Image (cartoon, rainbow, N blue to C red; front, side, top):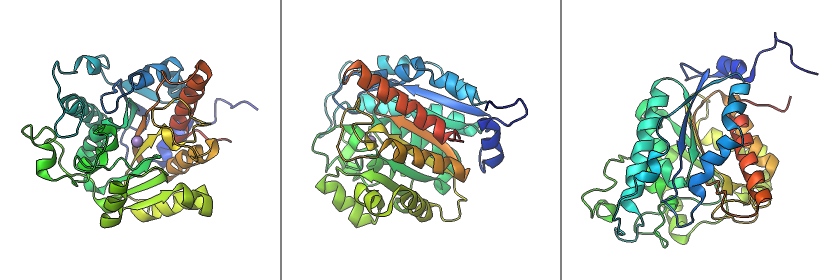
Length: 333
Ligand SMILES: [Mn+2]
């Protein structure tokens, strides 16, 4: 049965539900074609492929207006001519410059009252998205990090030096000053902006030993795939929300790494780990977060069109787009 002209759009239903957005009818999109936080090329084409697949048209089709940040091409040209490692950190200047620009763009969307949707790019850009969202919502904001990995290595604990495995250590303020300020405070613009008890993970299954020590030391709540198996995704999402947002009165920033999904569902990503979320489990998380009316910012990262065959690409881009739509209120019925 087709909808009648009198029936409300997804956007109208979400506007009735939202608790924080002043202009819920508009989605503020930031496209970040950036791959400097990890070694594999192609993840910088993620946003372009999602747009080519129709993500903007799809969001507009749900009844939203879309406002896209200017100058997505600038990210590629921001790479410094020389960017030697600082300690173990690779491409540190490039990551810092790009993330800082992301922060400005996300802050502008949040300040205007729109939901800030950021399409990556690798997960290092979340340094920027979280600085941007917390600049507007302060430490009332809580963070759902949906990922196979904890992304919480410090400059001291990282083995690879890839900054997409480190964004949360900067955001939570877990780095020693001397860790990353060798080059006169390269990441000094990132002030700790999220408390450790305002962060919760879902989907973890590949956590470095240094990261496990950090999670334990700070008592950071995490629901691994073991918990998804034990409790089911419905209970896990409920428990995760109860931890950071028990009354559902705090704004939510959800940072969704497609590698949280099983590689059979999202194969075109840089660091796939088997044993991940099913198609429905991933979508359920987005649907349940949409139902809270608390979502103010969403990152969808690590779609890498260069990895795998054309069908893997199509499948991964398609699932990325549908996760976004579900987070914005698309429902099965
Ligand atoms: Mn990640």
